Image (cartoon, rainbow, N blue to C red; front, side):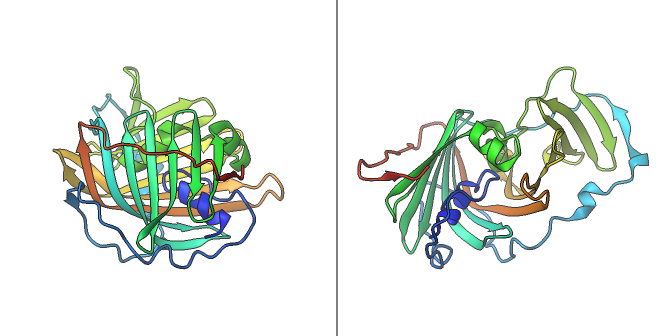
Length: 291
């Protein structure tokens, strides 16, 4: 697996996609899956490709339909721990891979643990906290360490733990405040927020009061992050989005060209639990730090 793909796999939940330069082979990574007997909710098999575009109709309602409305109580997922088995597809100018097998564990608002499997064995593991990201390549025995400040600067978009967690579970990345402003646009209530450098529009479906789309624009750069949630299914009496489709458009600081990245996370199994599933992560002493 290439170093580029190694870091691309961290973007399972987050939108950055290259870090190193040495080429490695990655053909077998998306071909096999592993079994996780602790996960109980099953979704349909993945058949489509990440190249399939997110429906533009969600963002194309006429401006004339906008109207101010009273605050809406958004239905969010309450949990202590989450365990999921997923497939991730990723497409950028330099990379394109389909249906890579990933196991995810989350301690709400605290930790995200990721295990990437291929050919019947674990090939990579990552741990994401509110402060940093550490990711190790178990095949080539090296590891990477990042801060959100480093990644935000490198990829010219403001990244944080709350946004990454939201990609997986479908809750608001920024909490709803008592004075939150809503407008109505066709079948959506739109919660408009300003968080530091980001202007965020949260599209809440009128039919189920769930976050259906998130669009964030970084004001200084006009870089955009769009996240669509699909395939809602019942998990512990909560509607959970089994598919997340992410699009990131970032202007290169070097050549001012827009670089587009698309990613899809499709969960096949999800469980919300009260007891910790464990977050084993230790970089062996023989591993070499690459970043």
